[in-house]
View 1 (tube, rainbow, N blue to C red):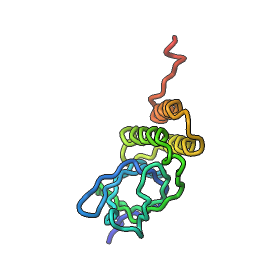
View 2 (cartoon, helix red, strand yellow; view 1 turned 90 degrees about the vertical axis):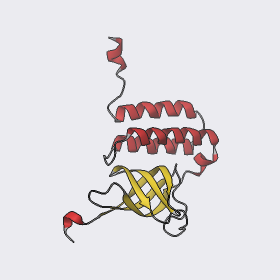
View 3 (cartoon, one colour; view 1 turned 120 degrees about the horizontal axis):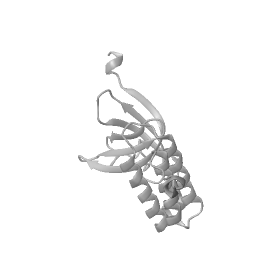
View 4 (cartoon, helix red, strand yellow; view 1 turned 180 degrees about the vertical axis):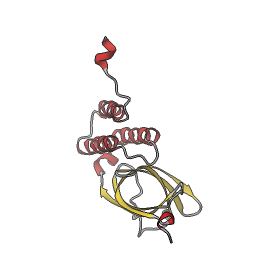
Length: 164
């Protein structure tokens, strides 16, 4: 097989931004990965496999994933996923869970496919870690995260110029 037709394997950290059932046992997952940006991947057998995914395909946690990317394919293939950084306090608090869900929704809509966004990635991890470490003031923290995302994507507000 020539290099132009071979797949590329990636092992990286990721956040689960969404998942949709596909067929009897598969999932199509949307991931925000550190090196690849937003990627959609087919997780074969994910709804019944306890070995390869071990309950890891849940939002809010940082995952360690193994992906295969094929040239000109819309979907990567998710080979494995495991929890890299669980956030058990966050998922136990309804207000924190709602704020984190809103933040992940923003990331899903704002990040372009297959474009690394290191500032958005770092801001998301800081936001989720803060909600996990210290539940409270979720709305204030969500607004701050939203402003950080705007800045990361080049849409930040320059209030000094607005006043002029």
